[in-house]
Image (cartoon, rainbow, N blue to C red; front, side, top):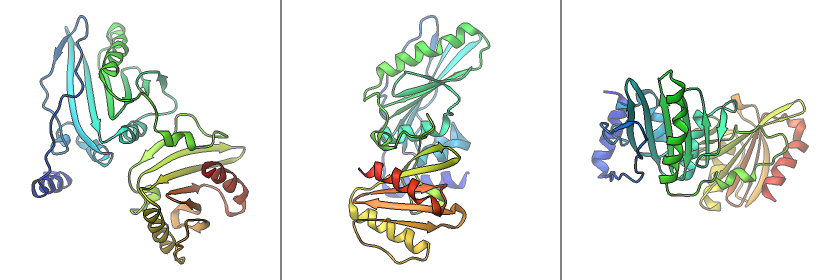
Length: 283
């Protein structure tokens, strides 16, 4: 048995956690196709049975339940996968790890994208994946009508996470924003960061925004980061440093109240650029 799967099963057994199965999203009918729902409901206990190699990524983003259905017409089939995550941020997070800025984006749900044989989107706390192996153009054309039906059945706002609005627009690369649930910059103590990438003249850098429940948790994380870089902790409510962070190079670290902003990719002599972007986020 997969060791990580074993650990999760043991944890569930001893913690008394119970995952309530609920068909929160009705799997719609698709005209001209026969709907087949022969798959079990997948939970954190058995997600490996469906997506073994990718299960860890979904679990780290707050996966709760997966419902699968297939739509058959002759030898052709369309597969629909509806993933329920912990919240809207979690749904965006897993969606953002699987999209590419080069895809054709669609106004379905909060955002969707289309490839030749697949259509993925997220809305509310749900991430939806629709795909087919059929070569028929008519079958592939049915992916969008099915996606619209599913999006209409999902409750919740069709909006992007609000934190994305806080990233400055100047130089920001479109549709490259992501949410990193854990291991930000390779550090175990940095979790839950939105990331945007920038290209400005000859500069290429990334900005990370981390929001905490309270200023105390924020300052604790700052202290851990400074200690990691062999610097004294700072207990003030705001501040900024330029850190030398091993493989990550120069890091501009700023914080105010319960928010941390990290900029990676700028050199120490590019402080003016870092300050300009940080000030806009904290304004």
